[in-house]
Length: 84
Image (tube, rainbow, N blue to C red; front, side):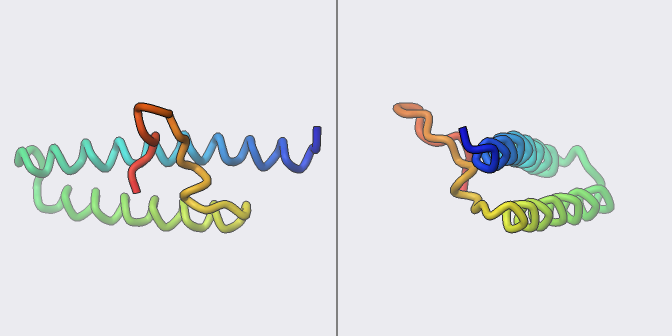
């Protein structure tokens, strides 16, 4: 086993989980906005937060030599784990 590869694989796994959670939070926020459950101020804060999280994910991927495609797991007949 190559220690560098193990570390990269672990980072990839962690970032995959973080990206999945980010996408789920984004979908939930959009549903709440569509239902009118949030104020205009909350919509603005949610949008800003999601944008910053997306940018941070790009930075973390770049720091570790990964792309967003590297994080997307192929689930066979179910398709891929992440949207993009």
